[in-house]
Length: 186
Image 1 (cartoon, rainbow, N blue to C red):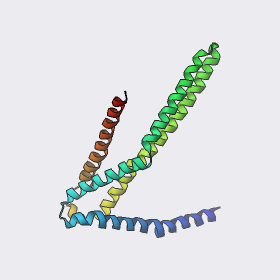
Image 2 (cartoon, rainbow, N blue to C red):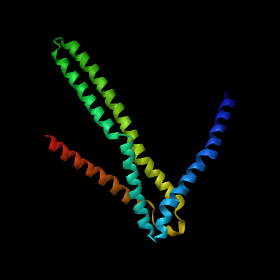
Image 3 (cartoon, helix red, strand yellow):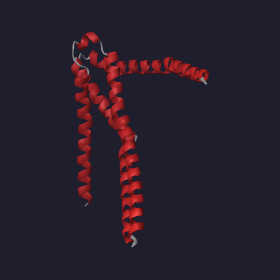
Image 4 (cartoon, rainbow, N blue to C red):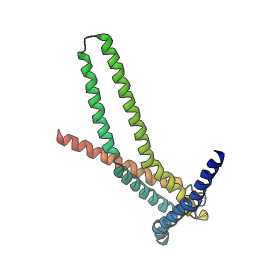
């Protein structure tokens, strides 16, 4: 058993060092060539480059939000959850209080389980949509920005300003649009 684990561990180590690391390095160099180099050639100051990178990765995050259909999943869950709550209300018609209470408890447990599953899925989706691009981008910027050019400037400050402005601005804009459409339907 121990030999099998060693063999498996060796396989994954080699896969990581021969496949994943070069892939990320190549991807990082490509992004640096496409995104950072033109800004450096245009002589955009470093905080401006970081701000623009934050905006770019904020837009990427919003695109991931659309591709993963997070909002559609949320609407689907809310309608299914509301239907289950309506079915729970039908239990009021049962005259035997012991049976009604037992069925209420079972229905509540089912609703709790569905809601906890929804929360776990939502947390995972938002982690993929927001945190993964954020962490990868900051690691990439720390790797590919020249250290002397930073001169004590924390990389994250201008980047996060652009990222948060893009993500929150687009979220608030989308919320206003949804409210306006809902008012128009009514």
